[in-house]
Image 1: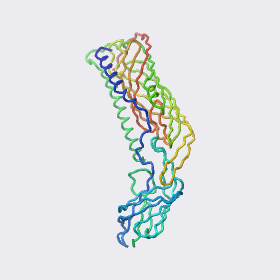
Image 2: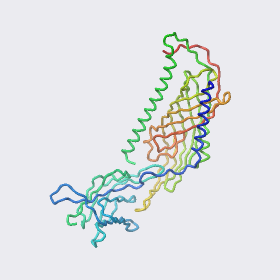
Image 3: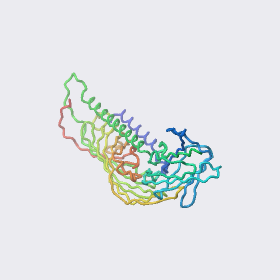
Amino acid sequence: MTKPRKNISFCLLLATVVACSGLFSCNQERQPCLVPKTASLNIECVHFAADTATTTIDTALPNAIFGALTNGGLKSVVYTTASALFTISLSPLADSCSWLVLTDSTYSTPPDTLNFYYTRQLQFLSNACGYTYFYTLSSATTTHNHIDSVLITNPSVTNNVNTTRQLEIFIHPNY
Amino acid sequence: MSTRQDNLKYLFTRIISIFLLLLVWGTIRAQVAADTTAAPDTVAAPHKEIGSRQLVFSADIVNPIRNMLTTSQTGYEFGMDYYTHGELYLVAEGGWGDSKVAYNDLNYTTKNQFLRFGFNKILLPRENATDWGGLFMGLRLGGANITRTAASYSVIDSVWGNSSGALSGKSFNAFWMEITAGVRVELVKGLLAGWNLRGKFLLNGKSFNDLSPLYIAGYGRGDKNAVFDFNFYLSYAIRWKRNEKATEPKK
């Protein structure tokens, strides 16, 4: 190697060794998990604008409570601000689960019960996040205190944060 | 992560890898063209390869340092290259390693051996018989045989409760392509040192995404379709005289 080339190469070699010495200065820990670890079922509450209408508009529930009926009892999520969009999860322990829905917690009316039937798929996210379950909704049923009906608009329940709603809840016209 | 995002990432890494491939190929072609098209008005003299034959044995010292600093993985890499002609070196590399995942929701270990084959092209032509260093770029095709033990996992769910399960152990292969660039210098006669930067692109990551290994020796993180890596080699060269037969230059 000629002298200028040799000098350039030596400089590059030294610079790299110095630069890379910091690269290995820490012990490798588990990488942070950067995606949601739980699959979300996105719900939108709607109602028909009029009896004869075919289009729907959002129904904001003022003080809604969603409660999961788990083996360990009722686990509730209280929404303190009015919203038409809610996110719940499905049980990874069985192929069906139930949620209680109280459209307005200030009313002393009985809640509605949503029943979900689905199939589970075990999904490896990454070594940083581990495993989770994705779901494919088969059907959903409801009682009719304040809810008129439910409609599955997208049966795929994953951890994709960009997924639009999977379920529409049609609120009773008298609500 | 969504399938659409995965597909986009997959497509993006493929486009980048093809672009880099073309870049390397273009550089090599340009270098060869520059070597062979000089002084077009004159009759080219018969080309005579400078220097002797060379076979180099290399040991990577980055991985042993990494092994000391981490508890979850070990890896060892060795290589050899042979100078053919026209600043082209045929390269074979190999090694082995293992990884251990012992998280509260995921447990398994893997072991693997790997081989890589390819070439390095010195970017600046040699000027005399003792000139054995320089900047280089190269391509590799790598493969690893991976053995994974049975894996246990837990799905943590704060609402419904945790669930757990196990996957049986299995063996599978990983294949990847590498683009590498680096520098090698001769410290004393026959003893060389140099580094490689490597961009690696997994070719069959989807075939083992039921549980991608934390670490594949020779590649890196098994749950990434594209990774960058760094090696620092200490090498020993064996040289012997080339048959002094002049060859016609390429046109």
